[in-house]
Structure formats: C-alpha cells, structure tokens
Length: 261
Image (tube, rainbow, N blue to C red; front, side, top):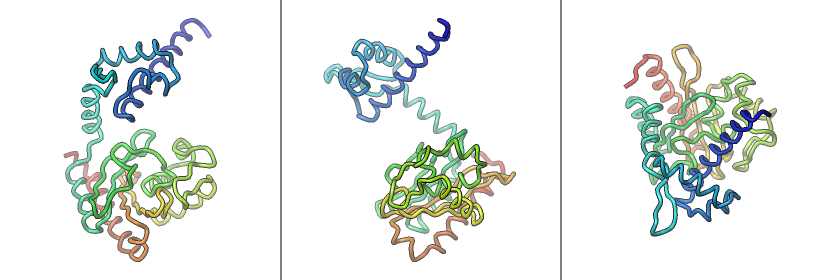
C-alpha cells in the first residue's frame, strides 16, 4: 500500500468511527466521552478528537452541566432534507390512512430506493399499533417482512443477494425463513399471487400482508402492507388481501400518472 493509499484508508476509518459515535449518541439519548470510549473501545484522546469535529459542525452539542454529548441541530436539517427527497405524496398518504381505517390495522408504505427497501410511511393507532421496529427509514429484515418479500419476489438473483444476509439468515420470530432455498420457493409463490404474507416471521404473535406498487413500465417501485395480531387476520384473509390489493392498485395508478404532489 502506498502512503497515499494508507492515508485514504485512515480517513475512511476516521469517517466510519465518527458516524458510529453519532449512532451511539442517538441510540443512548446522549453519552459522555468515557461512555463512548468504553462502548467503542477507543482511546479517550481519539474520542475527543472525533467529537470535536462533530461539535464544530453542529452534529453534536456538549451539555456541560452533565458532561455529556447529545445530537446537534444540523441533524434536524438532514432529516428534513431526507423527508423531502423521499416524501410520500399527499394522495398516497391518504390511501394508506384509509387502508388503516378500513381494516383497523397498522398500515405501511415502503419504496425500493437504491439498494434498499425503505419504509416511508406508517399509520397506526392504540387499537392497531404498528410492529414496533418498523417506522420511517426502516430497511432491515426483508426476508422476514411481507413488505420486503413483495420486493424480493420481483428481483433477479443478483439483486436479491444484495438484500439478504448469509445463511442462516437472522431469525426474528418462530416462523422466520432462514435458508435461501426455502425463501426462493416461497418468493416464487409470492410472485405468482402478487401478494405476500408473513405469520410470526418478523414478530411473535403478529401477521402481515403486502401487495406490490408498480410504475407505468410494470416494475415494482414499492409495496403496501398491513399488520395485526395473527388471530385478527386468520379468519378474514380474503378481506385483508382484497383491501391491500385495492390500495396497492390505487397507489400504482397514482405513480403511473406521473403526479408528484
């Protein structure tokens, strides 16, 4: 490795550690330099150097009275920009809200963005709570969620590989499919039916149903889904499928029309 290459690698590692500090502070609701040092196994001088860069850029703030660091205001600007870039049009939001109301179930909308399957809208209520980990920006566990399986079913093998963990894939619930072969067989059925179900695959006791949203070219650009306790869906699968398909079709018509507001 040349000195120039070594410098690039060093900067790359520094950037990675800096981002890890942000994630740590966000996850803990704030952290002291010592806590960051212990959690990341970094020397305190390194922590202070990286934190100083984040403070100077307003990505962190120092709460002196508590001797801890918290997220800075610059991150709010980034979050607003992210929401604007992948914001859900009003008409689509209305369709997802209406689906939630018709089925009294948590409703979701996810899009295929870059190499990720990302949830961009969730609608729930005390009577129909969402699956707790799934909120705006969620992009994990594609093999264990109905939202993810709809999109995986419409990918080629190379695309699918980029979204899946090595075998055995992580288990989230008692029904999680953890092998590539079994998942491939399951996704063939999903592709044929145009509907995906998961029962206790992502969260014990829960069930989820999803359908594809398609562009004018017929490609899958996203998915619509609902979730509830598995007992609530068990006796009305036909109704749930019909409502989810109807909403996915309405959202697809919107995207085919080319509207952006």
